[in-house]
Amino acid sequence: MGFRLFKKIPLLTLFSLFVFNGLAFAQPRLTFQLSPSLELAQVVYVSDFDFIQQGASQYLFQIGVDNSGGPEVLGLMRFEVFLESEMIASSQTEPFNLMADEAFSASNIELSSGFVTPIGQYVLRFDESETQNPSDEFEQEVMEGGKLPKGNYSFRVMFRYTEPQDDAVAPPKTIFINNPTYITPVAPGLPVGAGMTDILYTSFPTFQFNSDYDPTIKGGAPFHVQIFKKLDQHGSIDEALTSTPHFDAWLSETVFAYQAWGVQPLDPGIYVWRIQLQLITSSGTEIMDSPVYTFRIEDPSILGNEQDKGVKDDILQLLYSLLGERAKEVIQSLSDYNLTSIQVNGETITKEQLYEIIADYQGQERLITDFHLLGTQK
Image 1 (cartoon, helix red, strand yellow):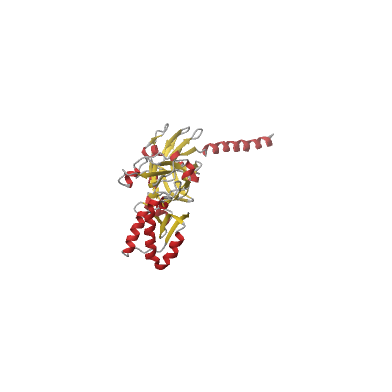
Image 2 (cartoon, rainbow, N blue to C red):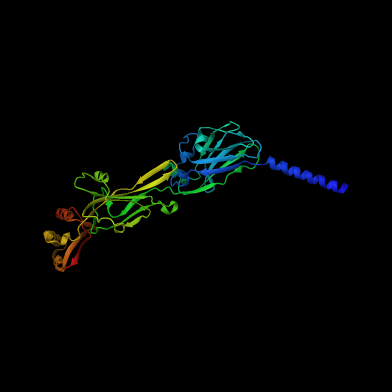
């Protein structure tokens, strides 16, 4: 009998110790949710995480604390941001008493301005905030635009005890920040103000532009493409850009065939086009504008009409000036073709530009290294 009693005592003692230790080391349960704007952000500003100096005007995250069934504990709330394994920003509150069975939820804005806990009535406020640069390259990029460089970033929140004990940590959140830096047209056209004109002989050109933004990361159609026709009443390109667009669409691809959209063909005339990239940032929505490009649509048959016979004569005179007696052979080969376009130094030019070149050449002001005549056989 004594033997059985001896065995019961340590079992009861062990059970009591287990219950006691379980209560003593019970941790608050934390939840952590990023705001939709931050979770979907392509651009994030470093200053948004400096809750002391800059304040918090943008909703970035929500923290939930649940101490149900747990004892009163003393600790602080801490928020951290990492690039890979390097910490780049952190903020924390002053220590406070988290009361038994206390539960609450607070946003970063409330923790910056001051949040009163429901039971303990403690004012929680970020009283320490720090940002740091893990490398010279990181620092350079931040200095240039104040934005987090491209990469994978992790966000985590914890309840840190004032006495040595494992922190209570919510599952971290990880997002990829794209931080695009440019968007620019490729074709058709040339930058406004370049001093040259790109001539097209098709009413359905293919448009292409480049950007370091990757639309496959976040999805959607972030590229806003607009094509404007410069009308006679427009005194400048800027006036054309404030008119009703000839073409206006949101796209997800950086190459598109104009004809595939089933739109009206581009009639002869001068056009300007641009792309706007819509970005979700930690401080709201922003628009990145591309340079404006311009091009001219020419009727492909215009140089073959009888009314433009004088243009051919001028070309023949230019060929004689350029080639001397060798021009006779070239002129003979042209007799079986209708002229459709002219290219000088790799650029398609208009009739008016041809006349300018002829005048410049006669005054020995222009060097012609490449001259092409394009045509169709009669």
